[in-house]
Image (cartoon, rainbow, N blue to C red):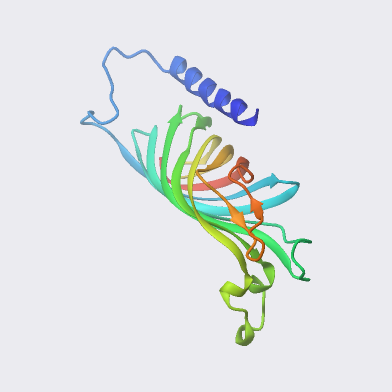
Length: 221
């Protein structure tokens, strides 16, 4: 249901922006204009989500070039982790959590960019890794006696990522924007299993869902 609402919002944003453009008898293209303008931006953002009644937080950054103020091509890097929790299927007092990181390509149409409040539709495509870990490894303050990585990893796997979204952007200053956004994160395949029992921890669809974000951007738009 949530992905349908997101897609509907994206379609509505595109439709409204197209009807709002001024009529111009000269055809304009994405790549064929000799007088095309170029800009760029660097953004950093924080994310929040809830899966299986657990909070997942994260953050990342992205950078890209902007053509004609309305289309950005760039790259992104992002990491996330869940709140630590006790896993009663493991006979241990340690806390466990999901964590991961990924990166890839960013394509972002921007509609009515000169308006103080406008819409952007970021689409992220990439890959990375997601795992299930003991939190003791990541927050052990005794660096002379930390655990080995394999001792604290239940399972880890590579993933393909596709994440379409929609942002409401605010032109705060000439070279500064902020935005709030929502996107739907989809992993191509995600299966994590316990080491000793081969019982499934999470399946392919268990960590797919809505991601909410707040971001800040600096650049030449």
